[in-house]
Length: 373
Image 1 (tube, rainbow, N blue to C red):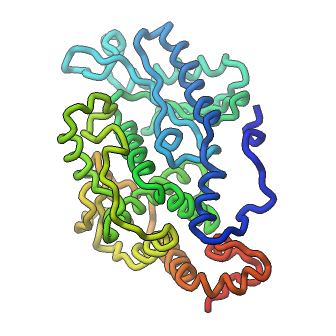
Image 2: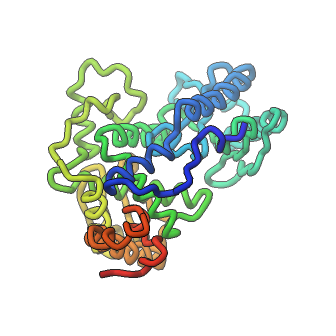
Image 3: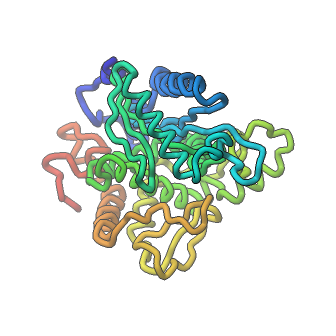
């Protein structure tokens, strides 16, 4: 199954529309997953789950990340967690007891199970194991399913895994306000064009970091577009009938349970504010938190860009960012913020050749490159 054929191809990558807002919405719509894309990903999980359940009754295979959080594109890789049934003892509360009795440590159980998963994948038709990192810190198996047109990554975890809670948080964020998805589509496309995002695992880390930066900005703009994570948790405490929450971090189940924002800014205005804010941010001394929507003093051993994980206060979502790339990031943000500010002037000249607002913002209109008024 060629997944490229499931989506319409357009002659123009960035078609000219009446405003940047409409072009960003069109970009979001073009790249978003359709119903078939979602079904393919769940089908892959079901196939693996049914095979594994014949050997380990009660095991679950749960998708997480951009395939479910609302920000994924149809080219997004599928990430899965093999969740073992909960035991009733306190020693291994989220492990499969017979395996813990047979093997000495959870790490050994993880390695053996990933070995089992890898062996199963090797005999599934149209499936190729790409990487088998059973003994690394981030143990996982990466594979390609050609018939479904998916690249996948699977690891061992538990139903209370932090990644599942993060997926649910970003699902709430993506569906809380209609401007959020096209806003991040613009940020993601900008990062790809400006080579802020590379490829593979680093690409995923960069996207997650930019997503956290966007959430922080939308929490701190006035009036706020998004509530803080702590405010979401307070809402969860008030919803007594909420029986369907899939996470252990006390978040509401549905985006409709979040308050409606009083902010009326356009996507273009929010995008300009996002780039402007972070191009000027003092990253040397400050760290940011989407838990409370605040800045705090960066730990002495913190990396150049420090964005606190809301579910693990000692973890930095942007730990892999180094000083050189950070300087480049802020320089390009400053340039882009300025281009959006003077976009009406640039568009007057660009529309003679039918260049779109988005191509001008990204500075890829041929005769306007590096041309700042």
